[in-house]
Amino acid sequence: MFIMTIDPSKISSSITPFAMIDEHSAIPSEQEILFTMHTVFRIAEITQTPSNSRLWEVQLTITDDNDPQLSTLTNRIKEEVQGPTGWHRMGQLTLKVGHFDQAEELYNELLNGASDDRDIAHIYHQLACVRQDRGEYREAAEFLEKSLKVYEQILSPNDPELASVYNNIGTTYYGMGEYSKALEYYKKSLKIYETSLPPTHPVLAISYNNIGLVYKNMGEYSKALEYYEKDLEITKKTLPPTHPDLATSYNNIGSVYDGMGEYSKALEYYKKSQKINETSLHPTQPCFYTKD
Image (cartoon, rainbow, N blue to C red; front, side, top):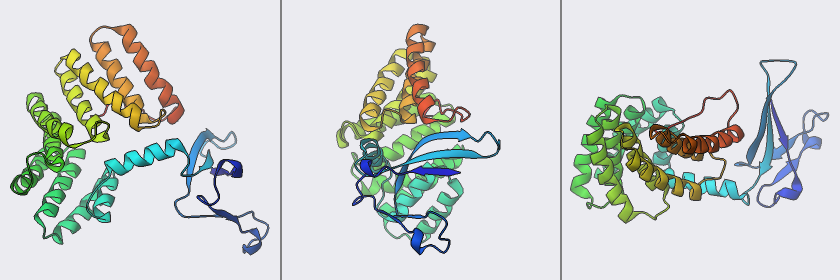
């Protein structure tokens, strides 16, 4: 059950318009409010009702475009979800929320209608991401090989799209446990990103995190810490302070200190991670501890 709270003093009605429509309702005894499309609510609290263990109350508070945390999060999503058309961006968003079958169906439809080489290479790349997210690394590698073959013929060596393919080849090798190969491609990807993207771009944070993850699994903790700290620096600048991804970054650094035997430092970062998770996740929701 959703319980919505509207405080007119905290929002601009010109930006987030809503209207009381009780007198126009088919059921006059009910209080009805009409919201504009794209109205955004902040989740304030989720509680289980005492009378019914299967019923939960979700407390929502209306917000608007002037909310600084919403603005930060929106800008981050816009940078992460990109593509030449709305359908391509929809595919990326579908992947991001874990609807892999829908993403695959969409990209196969786009592939059937594609004629431009760059578009075809992009779709092959996204189909590889679908397979990768399912853990189907061999199949992902086949699509990445197709994508890379086209991209290398039409793109400059420093194009970010080429870097993205290198990154996902690295992720495929990582998934197969081939850490040296993964590191090789992650670094090829990072070299392009560092020369072609702004220094606080979220893709750079992901790239630093990936390299840190490989070094941690190889037992090279000092190098892992170096890259995890770079990831954290960008994440702190581009996400709200209670975002779960920030908790993940703190947790990753904690795990490195843990592996190094520096338990006081590890505890410090684990507690930072826990504090965010306690405010952004329900106590029964499993925490997402690593970005791999």
